[in-house]
Image (cartoon, rainbow over all chains, first blue to last red; front, side, top):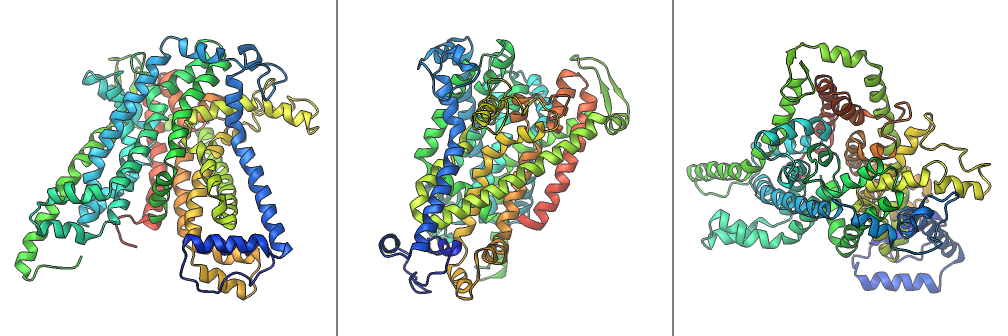
Length: 317
Length: 308
């Protein structure tokens, strides 16, 4: 935060107004106070730089936010207006027709249930496998652990298109083809390495004394993990769960290769709208909106945790 | 690892059982990855040496390296290889430039921009298939909004002047847009976090020395961010090289294969053209290329499992 406040001078005339070179107290109140000072008695140059930056940010946000807003607006148009030439940004007439069309189509509601089912199974599976593995890797820094986390990371490079078909035939061999379980296993191959990676970062932050104290108190190692360590990293587990859920919810290629009618997830249904019913743009936009809004809301609600997870994984490495 | 046991003998037994315990914890995940990733990969490589009938239970003839020769001899394969490389470079370069710009913007604006940082993150949660659809709708001929808006602004003489998704010369750039839109936020987030870790004193000292903004960026900020930048570029590069969803829904690889990247080609060879043997050979080569990159990246940048 100190950095944040200071680097803002980059853009212009260096201003020695900013508090002394070493102010170790970086509390929120001090930040606010400084900002207050900035607003009132600030030289024009810096104030205008700041204003310019805000304009830039506003422009970027509009550009960035617009595509999804346009999708939303379009979903409320009448089916004919959806493909009107020239297109309008706002609907001429607001209607839910696209939504009733999309959701009324056979298979659409079932695909939602499949998506939810698949994502939940995959999330649980990833966590059950990743939590102990990550703990084993970080707590006991053995050679096998180091090799394992490397291997898990390399798995990230495997293109799904390369293993989708063999995986599908394996599932068929055990009688699981076209089921949410088969698809969630495929999705777990994506989310498990990510989960191990994330959970390792979270375990790394737990002080070792904590469970040593627990073992001295007579807990077994497994008991210490379960009763002492897990509660401490529960926030990290939540983050990992969100990522695993999203990975499955948004996945398309495995779903395309491994599902037919019974277990099709919504992304496949959205894509199929293009061919199956000609180009039904209205229903497509409505379904896309319905599918995206829950996860966008979820993210906005849990944004702090998600930011933590993303940066932990990538920055700590 | 510091030795805590007072006697060497005791220490040894404790450590061995610790090692075994760690192994037990890792085994389920390792088994899972072995069965569901390593084994299918093995099948893929094995299939690449056979000529396989697309019909289930059809004949399988061993053909040695024939599929590999066919892959290298086909224009489609070489073309897709170059397009995948070009696509990856386009996506990663633009994302990095935009992501760094946004991260610097958020940093210079400080706390007051926090809420916008959250809003900026939203595309990360959208399914790639939806993003592809969304941008196709914006760029499509006739009723695409972008052409219309540029026309109304007087930049284009007619709304269809640029065939974003129908002109083979530019389609590879157009199909990259949703990918860039989706994950610039990721780049921004990671770089932003990296920027927060730069010690304030350093910036202060540079400023006292009279460093101007460009010098500050190129001499101080970027070199300090190097490890973070490296990780972000590798992570995104690998994802971009596997892009499938956004391209499939926008153009299905067309027009005239001008946007057909490796994932799409393998998919079409496997499913549409019904040649699993050739597709497996292509998949194996694709995978080897990715693993080569991954190996270099992991051994030079990540070094996971070690303390930094």
